[in-house]
Amino acid sequence: MANVDTFFLQPFKTHRKRLVPGQRVLARTKHHAINDGERMARTAEGLAVIHVTADDETGEVSALAVLARHGAIPEEFEEQIRAL
Image (cartoon, rainbow, N blue to C red; front, side, top):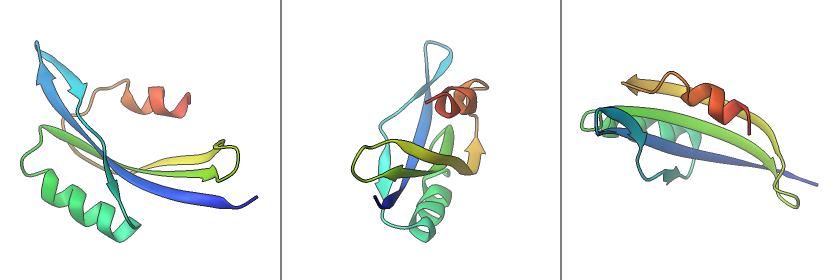
């Protein structure tokens, strides 16, 4: 059993006066995720850079961390992803 690291960017936009998640964007490495997050944050209302470590066979998540936050992010977002 080997762990696989995945990095992605979660943008947020306002829809009907509420912040809602947009389409996730995968990043190749932590460095790319942080750099792309800073670049995308210039145009997104909010953005979170997330690192997930999961078992490659079962898909079970062993660690989840928010590496960076930019702009407006819903208060309940981190609570919801940690509940996974």
